[in-house]
Image (cartoon, rainbow, N blue to C red; front, side, top):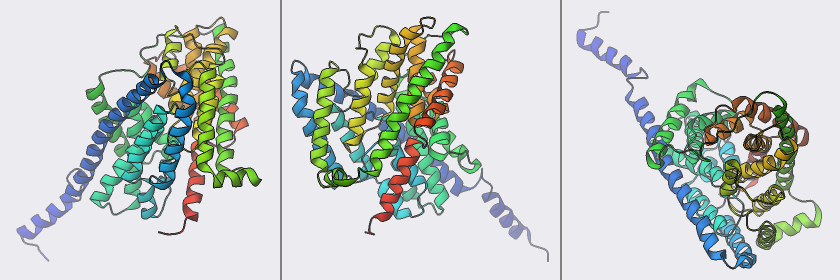
Length: 446
């Protein structure tokens, strides 16, 4: 049967519309990803500025009255936990486990609950409240969940038909959030592969890359070409100074592994009467955690509060006057802050703890420059906590604009990862995500 020219032209047009580069539907989806990436960069930049203002507000409140923190921290943490458990359920913790859990959900309604815009608003507001209260938390982990929620909301508007497309949006949002939070596009890509997706699927690779690049470009336009910790020129010549790689990997691996194991064990709940007491009195426990944060802060001279960004930068620049016990006090403060149940991440505090660990270890390796050992301490502890050595290496490298340390950083991260696995056999975020999924499945349907 011979078709007339008009029919052949219509058939050819329909075939052309199915081509990826010419399909209107595909272009609409691409626009959603791109618009989402730009919105994420705007939100992440605003969140970063608000976090800085929150820490300035905390310092102004406690200036001249350091013991006021004994009231401020318990009150702030209690209010944050109350709001988390009543209005913003699902906003507790760093946000990365929730994002990973959402990627493994098969029920769209459950995904809507975890990545709702209401939870995202609560995540931002309560993280800022935690910083005003002196908690040792970061904004980067919460940015991941907020960014994933933004992308998910755009996907709901578009009504994507397939679950894998919805997951691609969440993955792209989380990766773009890291890129925008740290101004580290390469780290955003690696984080999406190594931590969120644990794979690089051909179907989502272009989506993630495009979202991360657009988020990076928008952040660059808003904040300029800055590096998170400035430009660090430290380097490590091959020779005796490389002993610092083994020393930092061992110390950072053990410390980071213990930190992760404590959080994983706590997620299961305490046995016996202690566990029952915590379940019945979460607000009182949050207040006790606030008192502990206050006491740790007083003991550290006020250096264990907040994200730890200023302290880490001072150590990298070589003019730090922090006490030798700083990394211990900062680790304990971060641990207590997370266990209290308030929203807040551990990225920035972990980098600060690692920097303090490196500064202390530098005295044991006189053949290595102090600045280089601080960098190695940062990547060792961060790699051990997250058990994501490639992400840790790329983040530290991009945040300090230091490519000359790439090989020592990578070697330290991989060794610290191996040591941490001996202490904590399961990765922190993946394990917390599985725990979160179990809790969600046990909840009665709404």
